[in-house]
Length: 300
View 1: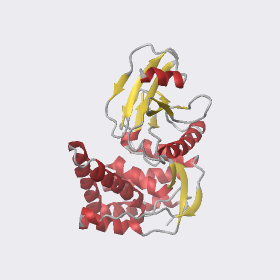
View 2: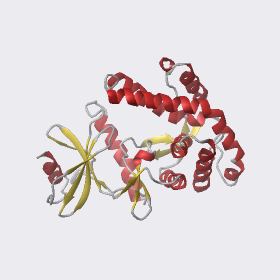
View 3: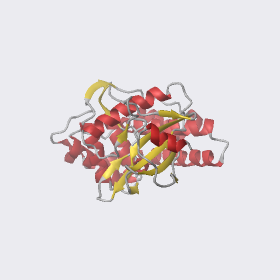
View 4: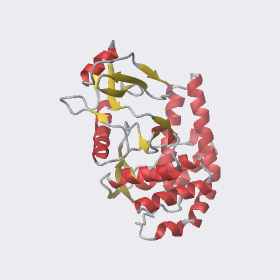
């Protein structure tokens, strides 16, 4: 079977039990393999795997991931294809990648733990100043409220603190292990990103859009990283664009299915919620700004 071939290709050892399919993935197919040498997470790549740029993008992300692992970031061990140093191996027409298996609870870490995890990733992500990343998203098709949100967050500084980072760190991409350590998983989108944009997106996810909890998460990130996240609308642009890209993809490619329609509805609801609470989120940040200001780098 294909998974036996994958185990051989990655030199994972002899299978000692049947592979187990792990439910819950939105974009790819995940299996748990137990071998004579250990326990492994094997992912069959599905979403966009047929696109010409897919392999190059994943391999570039793998470079960021391996550097973070080598620097001690809390995460499952990435496993390269022996003899190649690459993330992906092709078997029977499908692309696979492998990590060490981590037992734990997905999405259960505290906001403070998530802030600390992101700060540790940013610290080893080659921080440098560079041109601001593109923050444009054409949102008119999704109604006036969402279009106004996209417009409000679009304008920001010309330069940003750029880091090589996860770029998709939210609750679904974290695992709290048996020792209480929060780990970052699913690094397939890793690459350069504005530190402030990623911090704001993580804080939104951890706080479930509650202004006070959001401000606390931002404060924790600022204290751990030494980076100021200013109380200005542009800090939300990265999150808005990511949600917008997911919304557009689901509507275009999955909109005819019940699952796609559910994703469209949920993403629209989330964008509208943030649009309605944007001023409250910024006000909550302003009330705790003094806690972040000392010794931090001002980006805004």
